[in-house]
Length: 181
Image 1 (cartoon, helix red, strand yellow):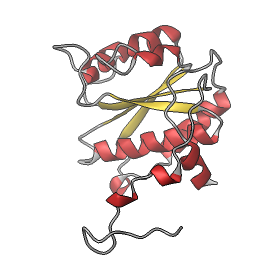
Image 2 (cartoon, rainbow, N blue to C red):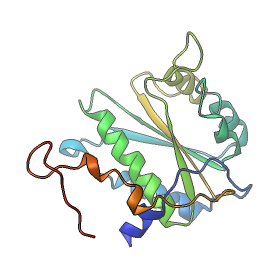
Image 3 (spheres, rainbow, N blue to C red):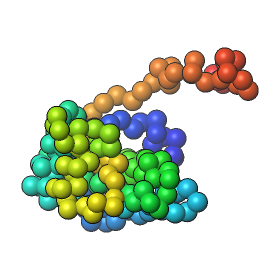
Image 4 (cartoon, one colour):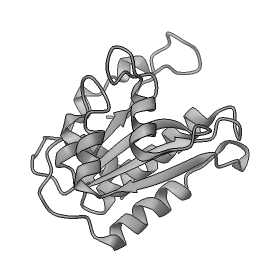
């Protein structure tokens, strides 16, 4: 079942005007909370955003690539306390991926919006913009926002023959890994 989820998963940027049920939001948050964390430090924190005005404001968090969030019924902001763990970026990325894949398993679709290391405009970082908009404490760093909802677009799956197996090596770099056909 897990392989079928990752085989069909695609990032979706067009969503139906249909709210995500509370039960499904609960499961998405549970997925994030169950994600592995270095040394079990769990530095991440999550913000569930369903307010249309906030989603619209957050859709301006980056100069390019976040505008579709205004049409999503749900956004989950993933942030962390870097003082709790030196690999908070990795821990947040894993949590974001768990949420991403859980959405797919629940019949929802999603798209990752990278916030860390991006710019809102020429002078303000995306992270600062999101933190100010949501009143996130300064001790927390924002990694991503996951836009989630019911899809209003269909994308074909990536075919197995399109996967970049040439980038996979066996026992030493440069020695091709031969996949089973």
